[in-house]
Amino acid sequence: METGAPAFCQRCGARLTRRDVQGAQRPFCDSCGFVHFFDPKVAVVALVEDPEGRLLYTKRNHEPKLGAWAWPGGWVDRGEVVEEAVAREVKEETGLDVALDGLIGVFSQAGQPAVLVAYRAHAAGGRLAPGPEAEAVRFFALDQIPPSAFPLDAEILAAWRACPAPFR
Image 1 (cartoon, rainbow, N blue to C red):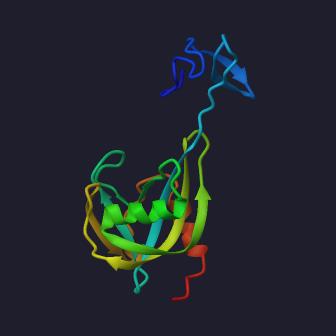
Image 2 (image 1 turned 120 degrees about the vertical axis):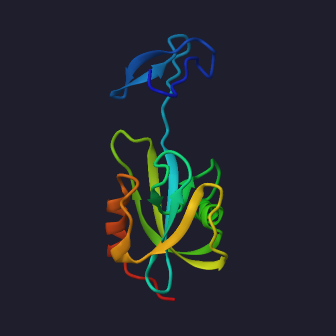
């Protein structure tokens, strides 16, 4: 079974098998008919701009991509409002409070469990300092952007460039 697949039925406790359900092999309970569907995990990132048009990056202090530069972001907790999650993640990783300037887009890739929601934002308070998940935080000029940490980064950056700059 797939990594993270349950071995037992959450309804009746019987051992799960695999069965083709709606075009995919899924954990299935032969005892009660329960089908376990894998839900995607929602993540958020913020492309935080400073007044000079530079973008904020964090140097990752954990895997995956330890030591790589990435936009501040992370997982949305169950029941959390997505916009509040991105503001929380930026604050935790960079020390900055942000105001969101709009949605850049929603991104996903075949075979990957995460759905990524990207926002355009600017600092609205706080003090720039790395949090526990960041080794460093820094604004980069557009001609000095570090190599992409994740496969969707190039697509997100292209979408950001296509978004009109917010009026402040």
